[in-house]
Image (cartoon, rainbow, N blue to C red; front, side):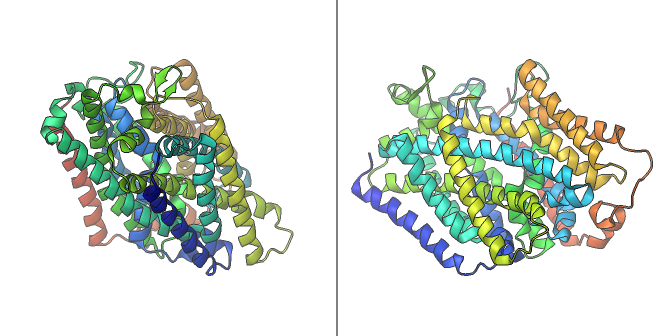
Length: 536
């Protein structure tokens, strides 16, 4: 139960978010203001906003649970992060120059211009279905956490968290999302760093803390398995190769991420967003993985801890280990700040999702259907706000029907994404790197890739879900090319297809090449760091 001072901290924070959104609502005149801040954002604030979304409640709850308790888990989650800097280079070089030149609001508008409306509607619709499902999982996770720490019922927790998020998102739009995410990032990392400090200190230091865990749980690299039918999801190759394509699809083709990059004032700023994330994400992930290691040691020293966790299907819900620790160990005042931090993580992921769902619904579906009518910028803005309310309420409602589809929420979210990430990326790559691919062929390729991944989920559970990103991508491209005509049927706008000519037109200065080289060297350094933790 929260004390009076804890509730005061939480209340002041939530009121501050609403006040900021009310102020920002006065600056909005059109849907472009609301969804992409009229392309006026700066690189650092956007990068921190993207990182805040990544440091979501699904990660904050799921990663420590995976490291501490899940069978086969441990610090091997960190090898997943080796793929991220490489994915950032790929997106910055091949995707951002094309997308930013198009001045998009919805990234799926690119598919409409490159292929046809049907392809745009299909991929945008699939994004909306998957992200709506993930939003429900997010609300479920945070409401469960809030319920444990505060003593509120699950329904009350959903309303407390969801209502405030919807209000500041509806009023402030993407500017409120970015500004609140930056503030939330600062609060969240501060609280997590303090928790890690407490856990490491109580264990007698980092080395002593890690020494109390089994060696297979502290090893960060797993070279003994390949994930192709051996039942090992978290081996090195699927996490590196599958993770690379998952990150390219997520950061480069997912509206919830690309929308922030499209807010940047210039192409250079959008690319800087990716470089900043490439350098800073690993330290953040390392922080909450170390918290997971500390939780495992804490559970060893406190035998009643695991038994105090809520039960799901007659087993402890390890996702709730971190909030349970907070309620047990932090003093009044700090508990309220910790609740604020966990709320911040949840809000930073949910606000971007419902805003991006609103953007794609308006730009990809509603506006084309209203093409025969004159729609003013103010009317588009009101449509955008109304759709944000709709998607926010949808996420809150589906939270009541979330069932377990994986051992932790972080795995659940990644499995849902991996089902469609590869096929969606395949459609974009058919558009970006080929001239002869048609919309019909791309759609059939997408359906083939999706069906193959669904079959693997259903009938080949021993194949790592990380490989779905590669398999779905490959099937989509192969089927799309096979069904496309051998000769060009129509002239493709050169701005829609990446080519050597396009490469020369955007240019790469020594500074950019240095940045990409720096990320590559950073990846090698991270590999050395993980090697120091040991191998399985």
